Image 1: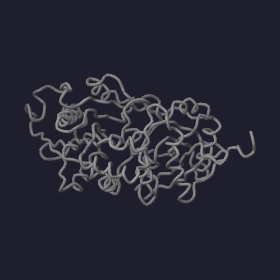
Image 2: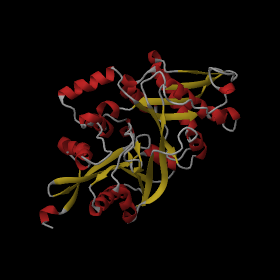
Image 3: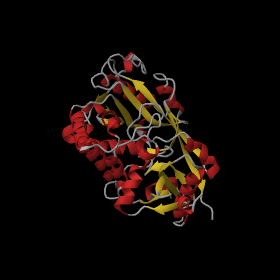
Image 4: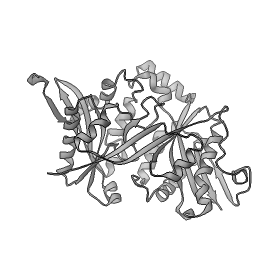
Length: 386
Protein backbone atom coordinates (compact mmCIF):
# COMPACT_ATOMS: atom_id res chain seq x y z
CA UNK A 1 0.00 0.00 0.00
CA UNK A 2 1.33 3.43 -0.88
CA UNK A 3 1.76 5.95 1.91
CA UNK A 4 -0.86 8.10 0.18
CA UNK A 5 -3.31 5.18 0.56
CA UNK A 6 -2.85 4.90 4.33
CA UNK A 7 -5.95 5.26 6.48
CA UNK A 8 -6.45 8.36 8.61
CA UNK A 9 -9.32 9.42 10.87
CA UNK A 10 -10.06 13.14 10.98
CA UNK A 11 -12.50 15.12 13.13
CA UNK A 12 -15.03 16.91 10.97
CA UNK A 13 -14.50 20.66 10.81
CA UNK A 14 -16.14 23.24 8.59
CA UNK A 15 -19.02 23.22 6.13
CA UNK A 16 -17.25 21.30 3.37
CA UNK A 17 -16.26 18.37 5.57
CA UNK A 18 -19.72 18.36 7.14
CA UNK A 19 -21.25 18.12 3.67
CA UNK A 20 -18.97 15.15 2.92
CA UNK A 21 -20.07 13.56 6.21
CA UNK A 22 -23.78 14.01 5.40
CA UNK A 23 -23.56 12.79 1.80
CA UNK A 24 -21.16 9.90 2.38
CA UNK A 25 -23.64 7.00 2.77
CA UNK A 26 -25.21 7.57 -0.65
CA UNK A 27 -21.77 7.51 -2.25
CA UNK A 28 -20.64 4.40 -0.33
CA UNK A 29 -23.84 2.42 -0.86
CA UNK A 30 -24.90 3.58 -4.33
CA UNK A 31 -26.27 0.62 -6.26
CA UNK A 32 -26.61 -1.72 -3.27
CA UNK A 33 -29.97 -3.54 -3.42
CA UNK A 34 -32.43 -2.05 -0.94
CA UNK A 35 -30.55 1.18 -0.22
CA UNK A 36 -32.46 4.42 -0.70
CA UNK A 37 -30.67 7.67 0.25
CA UNK A 38 -32.41 10.06 2.65
CA UNK A 39 -32.65 13.73 1.80
CA UNK A 40 -29.46 15.63 2.59
CA UNK A 41 -31.62 18.41 4.01
CA UNK A 42 -33.19 16.17 6.66
CA UNK A 43 -29.79 14.72 7.58
CA UNK A 44 -28.30 18.19 7.96
CA UNK A 45 -31.19 19.16 10.26
CA UNK A 46 -30.54 16.00 12.30
CA UNK A 47 -26.80 16.59 12.69
CA UNK A 48 -26.53 20.38 12.97
CA UNK A 49 -26.47 21.79 16.54
CA UNK A 50 -28.69 24.79 15.82
CA UNK A 51 -31.29 22.51 14.21
CA UNK A 52 -31.50 19.56 16.62
CA UNK A 53 -32.78 19.94 20.19
CA UNK A 54 -30.38 17.13 21.24
CA UNK A 55 -27.65 19.75 21.43
CA UNK A 56 -29.53 21.71 24.08
CA UNK A 57 -27.85 19.38 26.61
CA UNK A 58 -25.76 17.00 24.53
CA UNK A 59 -22.56 17.35 22.54
CA UNK A 60 -21.09 15.40 19.66
CA UNK A 61 -18.00 15.03 17.51
CA UNK A 62 -18.09 13.69 13.97
CA UNK A 63 -15.23 11.75 12.32
CA UNK A 64 -14.37 10.81 8.73
CA UNK A 65 -12.16 7.90 7.66
CA UNK A 66 -9.96 9.03 4.76
CA UNK A 67 -7.87 6.90 2.40
CA UNK A 68 -6.12 8.19 -0.68
CA UNK A 69 -7.92 11.50 -0.41
CA UNK A 70 -11.33 9.78 -0.41
CA UNK A 71 -13.81 9.39 2.46
CA UNK A 72 -14.40 5.69 3.16
CA UNK A 73 -16.35 5.82 6.43
CA UNK A 74 -17.89 8.01 9.08
CA UNK A 75 -18.98 7.91 12.73
CA UNK A 76 -20.27 10.23 15.45
CA UNK A 77 -19.45 10.17 19.15
CA UNK A 78 -21.88 11.85 21.50
CA UNK A 79 -22.54 12.45 25.18
CA UNK A 80 -26.11 12.95 26.32
CA UNK A 81 -26.63 13.96 29.97
CA UNK A 82 -30.32 13.03 29.71
CA UNK A 83 -29.42 9.46 28.71
CA UNK A 84 -26.74 9.20 31.38
CA UNK A 85 -29.22 10.25 34.05
CA UNK A 86 -31.73 7.74 32.71
CA UNK A 87 -29.24 4.84 32.68
CA UNK A 88 -27.43 5.94 35.82
CA UNK A 89 -24.07 5.08 34.24
CA UNK A 90 -21.32 6.93 32.33
CA UNK A 91 -22.40 5.62 28.93
CA UNK A 92 -21.41 7.48 25.78
CA UNK A 93 -22.81 6.79 22.35
CA UNK A 94 -21.79 6.37 18.74
CA UNK A 95 -23.92 6.82 15.64
CA UNK A 96 -24.03 7.99 12.00
CA UNK A 97 -22.02 4.83 11.43
CA UNK A 98 -21.23 3.92 7.82
CA UNK A 99 -18.20 2.37 6.12
CA UNK A 100 -16.90 0.41 3.18
CA UNK A 101 -16.39 -3.36 3.49
CA UNK A 102 -13.07 -3.10 5.29
CA UNK A 103 -12.43 -4.19 8.89
CA UNK A 104 -9.52 -1.75 9.25
CA UNK A 105 -11.84 1.17 8.48
CA UNK A 106 -14.60 -0.03 10.82
CA UNK A 107 -12.15 -0.68 13.67
CA UNK A 108 -10.43 2.71 13.28
CA UNK A 109 -13.77 4.55 13.32
CA UNK A 110 -14.92 2.77 16.48
CA UNK A 111 -11.53 3.45 18.11
CA UNK A 112 -11.79 7.16 17.29
CA UNK A 113 -15.28 7.47 18.75
CA UNK A 114 -14.29 5.42 21.80
CA UNK A 115 -11.18 7.50 22.48
CA UNK A 116 -13.16 10.75 22.29
CA UNK A 117 -15.72 9.37 24.76
CA UNK A 118 -13.15 7.85 27.13
CA UNK A 119 -11.27 11.15 27.33
CA UNK A 120 -14.51 12.70 28.59
CA UNK A 121 -15.04 10.16 31.35
CA UNK A 122 -17.26 7.59 29.64
CA UNK A 123 -16.82 3.94 30.64
CA UNK A 124 -18.98 2.31 27.96
CA UNK A 125 -19.79 3.15 24.34
CA UNK A 126 -23.28 2.18 23.08
CA UNK A 127 -24.88 2.39 19.68
CA UNK A 128 -25.39 3.04 16.95
CA UNK A 129 -27.91 5.79 17.57
CA UNK A 130 -28.20 9.11 15.75
CA UNK A 131 -28.17 11.07 17.88
CA UNK A 132 -30.25 9.58 20.70
CA UNK A 133 -32.64 6.65 21.01
CA UNK A 134 -35.53 8.83 19.87
CA UNK A 135 -33.77 9.11 16.50
CA UNK A 136 -32.26 6.44 14.25
CA UNK A 137 -31.49 3.53 16.57
CA UNK A 138 -29.64 0.25 16.05
CA UNK A 139 -27.59 -1.45 13.33
CA UNK A 140 -29.64 -3.19 10.64
CA UNK A 141 -29.26 -6.98 10.71
CA UNK A 142 -32.24 -8.06 8.60
CA UNK A 143 -34.68 -6.40 6.23
CA UNK A 144 -32.32 -4.81 3.72
CA UNK A 145 -34.82 -5.25 0.90
CA UNK A 146 -37.88 -4.21 2.91
CA UNK A 147 -39.68 -0.95 2.28
CA UNK A 148 -37.40 1.91 3.47
CA UNK A 149 -39.00 3.85 6.29
CA UNK A 150 -38.68 7.33 7.74
CA UNK A 151 -36.14 7.61 10.61
CA UNK A 152 -35.26 3.90 10.42
CA UNK A 153 -31.55 3.31 9.62
CA UNK A 154 -30.12 1.22 6.78
CA UNK A 155 -26.72 -0.46 6.94
CA UNK A 156 -24.91 -2.79 4.54
CA UNK A 157 -24.79 -6.50 5.32
CA UNK A 158 -21.05 -6.49 6.04
CA UNK A 159 -21.14 -4.18 9.08
CA UNK A 160 -22.76 -6.52 11.67
CA UNK A 161 -20.19 -9.23 11.04
CA UNK A 162 -17.37 -6.85 11.94
CA UNK A 163 -18.76 -5.70 15.30
CA UNK A 164 -17.64 -8.75 17.32
CA UNK A 165 -14.12 -8.44 15.92
CA UNK A 166 -14.06 -4.84 17.16
CA UNK A 167 -14.96 -5.74 20.76
CA UNK A 168 -18.68 -4.89 20.51
CA UNK A 169 -21.30 -7.11 22.13
CA UNK A 170 -25.06 -7.30 21.76
CA UNK A 171 -27.17 -5.40 24.28
CA UNK A 172 -30.62 -5.62 22.69
CA UNK A 173 -32.27 -6.44 19.41
CA UNK A 174 -35.13 -4.34 18.06
CA UNK A 175 -37.67 -5.42 15.46
CA UNK A 176 -40.15 -3.75 13.13
CA UNK A 177 -43.35 -5.06 11.57
CA UNK A 178 -45.26 -3.95 8.50
CA UNK A 179 -49.08 -4.14 8.44
CA UNK A 180 -51.10 -3.95 5.24
CA UNK A 181 -53.88 -1.37 5.29
CA UNK A 182 -56.22 0.23 2.80
CA UNK A 183 -59.53 -0.93 1.33
CA UNK A 184 -58.28 -4.41 0.40
CA UNK A 185 -56.76 -5.22 3.80
CA UNK A 186 -58.44 -7.72 6.08
CA UNK A 187 -60.03 -6.45 9.27
CA UNK A 188 -57.84 -6.73 12.35
CA UNK A 189 -59.84 -8.50 15.04
CA UNK A 190 -57.54 -7.67 17.92
CA UNK A 191 -60.29 -7.06 20.48
CA UNK A 192 -63.84 -8.42 20.83
CA UNK A 193 -66.52 -6.48 18.99
CA UNK A 194 -68.11 -5.54 22.32
CA UNK A 195 -64.95 -3.62 23.20
CA UNK A 196 -64.25 -1.88 19.92
CA UNK A 197 -64.44 1.86 20.04
CA UNK A 198 -67.39 3.19 18.13
CA UNK A 199 -68.92 -0.30 17.79
CA UNK A 200 -69.60 -1.79 21.18
CA UNK A 201 -69.67 -0.47 24.72
CA UNK A 202 -66.53 0.36 26.59
CA UNK A 203 -67.79 2.44 29.47
CA UNK A 204 -66.57 6.04 29.38
CA UNK A 205 -63.69 5.44 26.93
CA UNK A 206 -63.57 7.64 23.82
CA UNK A 207 -61.12 8.41 21.05
CA UNK A 208 -60.26 11.40 18.90
CA UNK A 209 -57.76 12.58 16.31
CA UNK A 210 -55.28 15.44 16.10
CA UNK A 211 -56.64 18.96 16.53
CA UNK A 212 -54.75 20.91 13.88
CA UNK A 213 -55.80 24.22 15.40
CA UNK A 214 -54.51 23.08 18.82
CA UNK A 215 -51.55 21.03 17.67
CA UNK A 216 -49.15 22.35 20.34
CA UNK A 217 -51.60 21.41 23.08
CA UNK A 218 -52.00 17.92 21.64
CA UNK A 219 -48.23 17.68 21.32
CA UNK A 220 -47.86 18.33 25.04
CA UNK A 221 -50.48 15.66 25.80
CA UNK A 222 -48.52 13.23 23.63
CA UNK A 223 -45.25 14.12 25.38
CA UNK A 224 -46.66 13.67 28.87
CA UNK A 225 -48.29 10.33 28.01
CA UNK A 226 -45.20 9.04 26.22
CA UNK A 227 -42.87 9.94 29.09
CA UNK A 228 -45.22 8.29 31.58
CA UNK A 229 -45.82 5.15 29.49
CA UNK A 230 -42.19 4.58 28.51
CA UNK A 231 -40.51 5.63 31.76
CA UNK A 232 -39.30 2.08 32.56
CA UNK A 233 -38.66 0.81 29.02
CA UNK A 234 -35.10 -0.05 28.11
CA UNK A 235 -33.54 2.41 25.66
CA UNK A 236 -36.14 5.14 25.98
CA UNK A 237 -35.33 8.62 27.20
CA UNK A 238 -37.89 11.25 28.18
CA UNK A 239 -38.98 13.83 25.64
CA UNK A 240 -38.48 17.44 26.70
CA UNK A 241 -40.91 20.19 25.77
CA UNK A 242 -38.38 21.51 23.24
CA UNK A 243 -38.16 18.05 21.64
CA UNK A 244 -41.87 17.88 20.94
CA UNK A 245 -41.98 21.50 19.76
CA UNK A 246 -39.20 20.76 17.25
CA UNK A 247 -41.03 17.62 16.14
CA UNK A 248 -44.23 19.58 15.56
CA UNK A 249 -42.45 22.21 13.46
CA UNK A 250 -40.80 19.50 11.36
CA UNK A 251 -43.87 17.29 10.92
CA UNK A 252 -46.76 19.73 10.75
CA UNK A 253 -46.74 19.92 6.92
CA UNK A 254 -47.10 16.11 6.84
CA UNK A 255 -49.73 15.58 9.53
CA UNK A 256 -53.47 15.06 9.31
CA UNK A 257 -56.02 14.58 12.12
CA UNK A 258 -56.11 10.82 11.34
CA UNK A 259 -52.41 10.43 12.17
CA UNK A 260 -53.05 10.85 15.87
CA UNK A 261 -55.05 8.48 18.08
CA UNK A 262 -55.81 9.70 21.58
CA UNK A 263 -57.88 7.41 23.79
CA UNK A 264 -59.43 9.04 26.86
CA UNK A 265 -61.15 7.60 29.90
CA UNK A 266 -63.62 9.96 31.55
CA UNK A 267 -62.00 12.78 29.57
CA UNK A 268 -58.44 11.98 30.73
CA UNK A 269 -55.78 10.80 28.24
CA UNK A 270 -54.80 7.16 28.82
CA UNK A 271 -53.35 5.98 25.49
CA UNK A 272 -51.74 7.67 22.50
CA UNK A 273 -50.42 6.63 19.11
CA UNK A 274 -48.80 8.79 16.44
CA UNK A 275 -48.28 7.85 12.78
CA UNK A 276 -46.06 9.81 10.40
CA UNK A 277 -46.07 9.50 6.59
CA UNK A 278 -43.03 7.88 5.04
CA UNK A 279 -40.97 10.62 3.38
CA UNK A 280 -39.16 8.01 1.25
CA UNK A 281 -42.40 7.58 -0.71
CA UNK A 282 -42.01 11.03 -2.24
CA UNK A 283 -38.21 11.41 -2.19
CA UNK A 284 -36.75 8.01 -3.11
CA UNK A 285 -36.18 8.88 -6.79
CA UNK A 286 -34.45 12.20 -6.00
CA UNK A 287 -31.17 10.62 -4.78
CA UNK A 288 -30.89 12.72 -1.63
CA UNK A 289 -30.05 16.01 -3.34
CA UNK A 290 -32.94 17.19 -5.54
CA UNK A 291 -32.37 19.56 -8.44
CA UNK A 292 -34.57 22.69 -8.59
CA UNK A 293 -37.01 20.62 -10.65
CA UNK A 294 -36.73 17.85 -8.07
CA UNK A 295 -37.70 20.24 -5.29
CA UNK A 296 -40.74 21.27 -7.30
CA UNK A 297 -41.69 17.61 -7.68
CA UNK A 298 -41.20 17.05 -3.96
CA UNK A 299 -43.37 20.04 -3.05
CA UNK A 300 -46.10 18.92 -5.42
CA UNK A 301 -46.09 15.40 -4.01
CA UNK A 302 -46.20 16.76 -0.48
CA UNK A 303 -49.18 19.01 -1.21
CA UNK A 304 -51.01 16.11 -2.83
CA UNK A 305 -50.05 13.80 0.05
CA UNK A 306 -48.72 11.20 -2.37
CA UNK A 307 -47.66 8.78 0.35
CA UNK A 308 -48.44 5.07 0.32
CA UNK A 309 -46.87 4.08 3.64
CA UNK A 310 -46.41 5.41 7.17
CA UNK A 311 -44.78 4.53 10.48
CA UNK A 312 -46.11 4.36 14.02
CA UNK A 313 -43.42 6.26 15.91
CA UNK A 314 -45.14 6.54 19.30
CA UNK A 315 -47.54 4.26 21.15
CA UNK A 316 -47.97 4.40 24.90
CA UNK A 317 -50.43 3.58 27.68
CA UNK A 318 -50.72 5.62 30.88
CA UNK A 319 -49.32 4.08 34.07
CA UNK A 320 -52.68 4.64 35.77
CA UNK A 321 -53.88 1.57 33.83
CA UNK A 322 -50.94 -0.65 34.82
CA UNK A 323 -52.14 -4.08 35.84
CA UNK A 324 -55.73 -3.49 34.72
CA UNK A 325 -57.74 -5.34 32.07
CA UNK A 326 -58.36 -2.05 30.26
CA UNK A 327 -54.65 -1.28 30.24
CA UNK A 328 -53.93 -4.70 28.73
CA UNK A 329 -56.17 -4.10 25.72
CA UNK A 330 -55.27 -0.44 25.13
CA UNK A 331 -52.47 -1.14 22.59
CA UNK A 332 -54.90 -3.37 20.67
CA UNK A 333 -57.53 -0.63 20.70
CA UNK A 334 -55.01 1.93 19.41
CA UNK A 335 -53.74 -0.33 16.62
CA UNK A 336 -57.32 -1.20 15.63
CA UNK A 337 -58.12 2.50 15.37
CA UNK A 338 -55.03 3.06 13.23
CA UNK A 339 -56.04 0.23 10.92
CA UNK A 340 -59.54 1.66 10.56
CA UNK A 341 -58.19 5.10 9.76
CA UNK A 342 -55.84 3.60 7.22
CA UNK A 343 -58.86 3.04 5.02
CA UNK A 344 -59.45 6.78 4.70
CA UNK A 345 -55.78 7.57 3.97
CA UNK A 346 -53.72 6.56 0.92
CA UNK A 347 -51.45 4.21 2.90
CA UNK A 348 -51.13 0.57 1.92
CA UNK A 349 -48.50 -0.20 4.57
CA UNK A 350 -48.01 0.93 8.17
CA UNK A 351 -44.79 0.00 9.96
CA UNK A 352 -44.63 -0.52 13.71
CA UNK A 353 -41.07 -0.02 14.89
CA UNK A 354 -39.07 -0.25 16.74
CA UNK A 355 -40.25 -2.94 19.22
CA UNK A 356 -37.90 -4.50 21.77
CA UNK A 357 -37.35 -8.21 21.07
CA UNK A 358 -38.12 -8.82 24.76
CA UNK A 359 -41.50 -7.03 24.62
CA UNK A 360 -43.38 -10.29 24.21
CA UNK A 361 -46.84 -8.91 24.96
CA UNK A 362 -46.61 -6.29 22.21
CA UNK A 363 -45.03 -8.74 19.78
CA UNK A 364 -47.78 -11.31 20.34
CA UNK A 365 -50.37 -8.63 19.69
CA UNK A 366 -48.75 -7.44 16.45
CA UNK A 367 -48.09 -10.99 15.27
CA UNK A 368 -51.81 -11.64 15.26
CA UNK A 369 -51.84 -9.33 12.23
CA UNK A 370 -48.41 -9.94 10.71
CA UNK A 371 -46.55 -13.03 11.96
CA UNK A 372 -42.95 -12.09 11.21
CA UNK A 373 -40.82 -8.94 11.67
CA UNK A 374 -39.77 -7.22 8.46
CA UNK A 375 -36.57 -5.75 9.97
CA UNK A 376 -34.20 -6.42 12.84
CA UNK A 377 -31.69 -4.05 14.41
CA UNK A 378 -29.02 -4.54 17.09
CA UNK A 379 -27.67 -2.20 19.75
CA UNK A 380 -24.09 -2.86 20.87
CA UNK A 381 -21.93 -2.01 23.87
CA UNK A 382 -18.15 -1.67 23.88
CA UNK A 383 -16.14 -1.17 27.10
CA UNK A 384 -13.86 1.86 27.04
CA UNK A 385 -10.68 0.63 28.65
CA UNK A 386 -7.40 2.47 28.84
